[in-house]
Image (cartoon, rainbow, N blue to C red; front, side, top):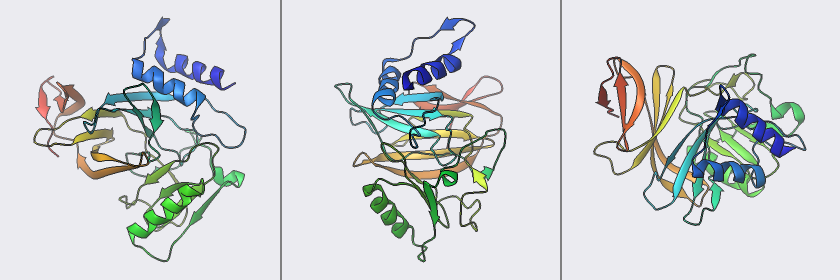
Length: 266
């Protein structure tokens, strides 16, 4: 069943006008890993179509291990839109437990028809008396040890029990819905473009997502225990006359309406 679901999803997303496209080797390895070892969004015995949208392949921290930043359209609104996989020199794939959800929290959309684990009794939202970010993170670390997936928000913590490997997200930097004590009123944004590479005068790699009129910029400092992303986040407005993000010899730039490449300043 899972094999049919993932093949169908891939054909729907990447076969155009009867032409089939060859995926990069790294993407084939990641898809095979997802299918056989780490199927996403598994709650109980239900399987859903795997819906890839885009990806970036890069050694983001220059350690000889390839990262694949995979953008998907998740079925559950507490699942990351960006998942990071690592591929070593022997083509062994693993997933970083922490995922990303670039963009602001937005009002629920009936059009997206997201599922919610709260309705199945497999999720709960919790509030801690402390507002110290480090205590939230320690709670998340403890939850992961017990097989619970965790999303940290400004004012509360979402946890759920999925089959297979856990997910973790840290969205405490967002002020959206900061007075809410549960995630029932909002969902994640969907990035319109993603890119990964270098910026001038920075020794660290960047992952950047365009969401509406902003760029969510993640400076990737490394990865901890194959679980957490060491990162710095900055949100900037689109440069004037912005058309799209573009890679130029591994450097992230943007193209303006005249087709000119400009340096991106963060």
